Amino acid sequence: MKFFNEYKRQLITLAVIALAVISFFTAGSRINAGFLGDAAGFVITPLQGAVASVTGWVSDSASEIVHRHELADENRELKAQIAELQAENERLSLYEEDNRQLSALLEMEQKYRDHETTGARVIAKDTGVWYDSFLINKGTTDGVDADMPVLSAGGLVGRITKAGATYSTVYSILDSRSSVSAQSLRTGDLGVVVGDRELMEQGLCKMEYIDSDAEIMEGDEIVTSGLSEYYPAGISIGFVREIHNDENGLTRYAVIEPSADMKHLDALVVIQETLETLPKTE
Image (cartoon, rainbow, N blue to C red; front, side, top):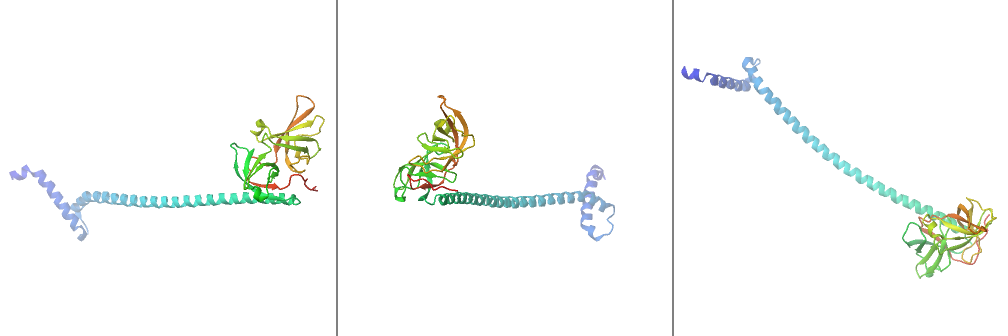
């Protein structure tokens, strides 16, 4: 009795735990668990809930990780497909631009069909944004020689100054060493288009020696006059952007914006004649 009284609290606790365990294992064979079953349920149910929660969290986390990996794989595949489509689009754009340029050059060759011409491409250029001096991939073995005019789809580019066997050097109308006899297509007013170092930085050139009484105006198209030994008549050079009076008061000069795209030259046409004039066009 003394032992029981001394350890009464501990014994009761052990009894409750033992009964709870017994009730847990025998709960399936009874319809009504009674007070001890409820006690066991009170102890065990939260444990079961906790275990279920942890199990569910682990399962959900694993599923989320798998899903993230799947999304990452899909994302990589989509990025690869997008990159491939972009590359293909760029290739098609280049083909389209090449086709446009070649079509324009073909039209130009047809316009000058009474003259012998050959196609050429730019293979090197001086440093800088604008094409003032550059090399083309045609030379004497292709029937190309010095002083032959060079054109792009837009108009006059310049002339060949030196021809090698398989390449040639071209000075464009922007180069300060260039000089082209020119006239206004609208009025016939004459002048000389020359390269200017300062204007070249803007992709422009200058028409000098315009008579002070000339009726030339801003927006007029300037073409080759045919008075040069190098350039046949009627090739578009550019358009008048500005007109200024010279200091002497006797002449004027005009700032010319070239018809050719002097910033993006590639496919060109060389007229393989230097002394004849172009046929008149209606």
